[in-house]
Length: 110
Length: 110
DNA sequence: GATATTGTTCGTAATTTTGCGAACAACGAA
DNA sequence: TTCGTTGTTCGCAAAATTACGAACAATATC
Image 1 (cartoon, each protein chain N blue to C red):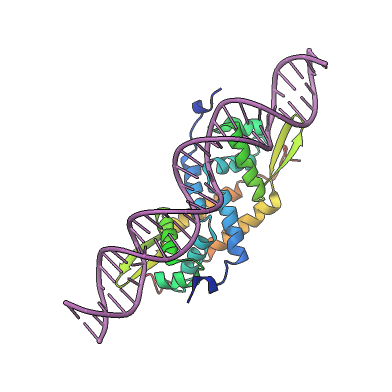
Image 2 (cartoon, rainbow over the protein chains, first blue to last red):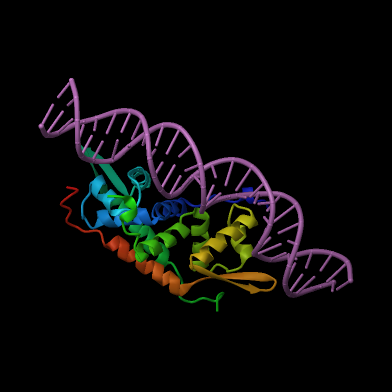
């Protein structure tokens, strides 16, 4: 059987992977953590917390925005970033369900 | 203030990011899902579920092993992969805590 | 011993990620 | 209008990721 005949990944798996990928860098975890704890929501303050250049911070923020985990709005002359609460809850549910799916009884693995 | 004077990322953030990164690909999510649901634990069966070459599957399995989410043991002539339950629980806790840390009251983001 | 089965490793290629400094854009303030 | 502040975008470089086929290793079976 050829690989190409097989099914694609499920939508759910794709979505969970997308969330996970967005969280797959310590800088982005730090950003999310910072925003979730409401220490501030401005770019400058976020940048100040991280050991990387502002251009790089901006890039990470863009990735988090693309993944749907945060939003960004201009509040001249600053830029305000916020947790996207709806998608945050969605991600939370995805991860919860995923981890909870592990079966207790394991006939295969001893 | 220079970027290099800033602190590194915290151990917890690094660890959570490592787990997330390992989960950041649909093939690896599928593998974990497959193993968690005990459909089987042999390489061949895992490979059969995925639309990618066996060399690539082997690579993904190695990454999951490196992240500590699964274990791999030879059971000649097959290879058996299992969820690393201790680290699975650890990851579960990390994600739970992370998502739960979002504050309700948000003075910054309206 | 010869052969088939099962996975890993190697070598390679294409793409993505991560990171930086410099340049730029947008706006408020002097 | 000029200047300073705030972030984004551009261009580039280095490294990591993803993927494949072919070759290889290990074992079971004939």
